[in-house]
Each structure stands twice: as structure tokens, then as C-alpha cells.
Image (cartoon, rainbow, N blue to C red; front, side):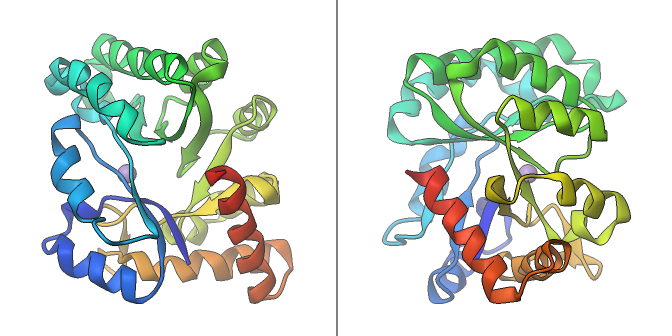
Length: 241
Ligand code: MN
């Protein structure tokens, strides 16, 4: 199983969740929302060969944490993964739009000058702006649009500029989510949970429940569950290499 977008450090008992993920042999991308969370979050992956830690600065707190951009640059050589970063156009966050743009642009430029990274990106109500930024910084690396919620046309544009996608059980429960996923290239999709933010059955989702996204994709792709799992594993190998 692959959970390519998970906030391990935000569960009430992150070490317990990490232990379960190790036992279940889950490949997990553990994100941070601020550079100052890096060391604590990275320590959760000590001895866990399938957990990778990503360095992030979340758009919803860009205005509060932009002073950590120097720490971001200092830590960037430690990892091949960046996230959670991006832009959020919802009214409560768009009032800090200038700071969001400043932070996201800085992150993409730093990724570019460091030879590129795999970047897990938030684009809620801001797909166009995220794609504009990615187009300006093609050498930033491989962009993975997490929980894509744009239009079909925006999806087409994202595919054209080379984006990857990570989709989760919650997204795939809706008709719109299924339709978007069906248009994404099979070989550029990964599964995610966005736990503990995303909810399933009225409580936070756990990384191992990502298997519900694998079943949903198998249905969309009209494939056996094992074949869908094999496709996703091949995708992970591609993006990680
Ligand atoms: Mn997230």
C-alpha cells in the first residue's frame, strides 16, 4: 500500500501510527506543514525504510511562517521530497495571497536550484495559479497535485505540463472525484489519505485505509485489485527513481 500524502506528525500518537505503518509495510510520504517541524517529523521515520519525510510550508500558514524560508533552504539538501506546499484560494486564506505567492515561488525556485524535487502540492480553489507557477519553474521537479479538485480543462492542462496526482478514499467517494481520476493517466497516479485531516466514517482516516482508494481505482480502471496495486507500485518506483 502507498500513502503518498499523510501528516503523520499530526496524529495524537504519531509513533504508534508509524509503527503500524512499518508493520503493514506501507510506503508513506510523511509531510510537514512548516520547516521547524522537520526534525521531529523526520525522527518518526528512523529505522523505517518505507517512510520518507517531505519538507513543507503549507499555504494556509504561509503568512505566519514565511520567516522559516531560510530554514527551508537550509534543510532542503536533506530530502528529495517537498510538501506540503502550494496555494489556497479559499476566502479565509486568499487574504494572505501575497504571502502565499511569495512562499510558493521561493519554494519552487529553491527546488530548481537544488536540482529538482518530488513536490506534493495543495491547490484548493487555486489550480490555475498553481499551474501558472509550475509552468514558470519547469525544473522544480515532479509536481504531484494532491486531492485535485479543479475543472476538467484544468486537469487537461495539468496533464499537459507533466503533473502527477495523488488521490484518496474521500476524493474517490464523490462522483466528481471519480470522473477526474478516470481522466488522469494511469501511470501518473499515486494513492494518499491526507490523514489525519481527511475523514472517513466521521473520524480521521488512517494510512492503511488507503486500500479503499486502490479498490476505487481498480473499479475506475476496470482492472483486478492486484493489477491496480501493481500499477501503483510501478508508479511509485518511477517517481522515486
Ligand atoms: Mn495535506
